[in-house]
Image (cartoon, rainbow, N blue to C red; front, top):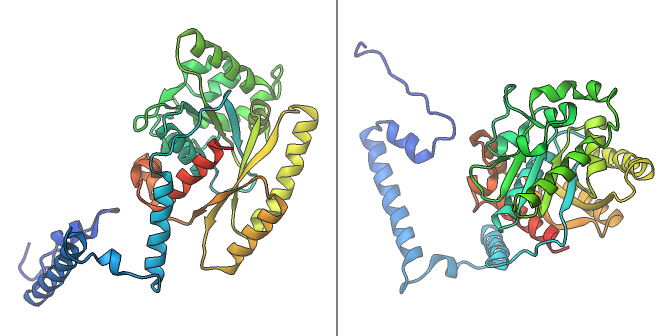
Length: 350
């Protein structure tokens, strides 16, 4: 390379600022500025962490919005420390559904499942969305050559043959989805008892676990596609509870009314035990009046079902799937992980 040419280095995505800084060679003046800045940072850090000296956090009062937020999060975390979640008397089966796309169904499914499993409970996630995003987030292989929930529904393959353990979290299992599910809606039409096939597979799997001396499943979460086709109908027939994630925007309210009508139809004709037990507000942006209005309206109409926990918009939650992780393992100290831990605890104690 000639001396007149300038070399540039691309910074890989998700690289930390510190790593990016080390890749570049700053000028003398910039080096001096960095040294001065780092010395200030180190001094602040020393003051913050000194045991017998003044503590920066202790000196912060509630007049600062950041201080108020930090104090609030600290109190929330303290309430969760050492908290033991009760084991349900029997397996609770949730269908996580909303006909509107992009409201956080898959994110809610995998993170609540991960939070419950981290507390020592046995949890199974069944992915019946052809996109297979829940399988990706849990680090489970779901390419076309893998046996999946498609083979269970269409080819009567035992559920035990497709369930795989999550590599990051003990007690968490997943039945993956593959692209073959995209055509399952049509193939199910001609099959006998087409609405009950998932329910029967779950019942057989539970008996096999008991026969093999494995622990009973405490929770099953079924991640649905954003539609009311036969895949979602199978999920409604297999479950006893519906968990509805609602994005804090106006369109979410319109979709909710239609979803509730469809659930009522399922209750009347296919599964009388089904109930909407849980509603979780997601993608909450406290800076907007609209989010607060939507949250208030949902709480007014469904005071018993809406969880107190609210999931905020979070970059960490969005980043986690790109590492094939849930936010619970990707960044357990983030506000998103804290919110899902609170939601999981609330569900377990209901």
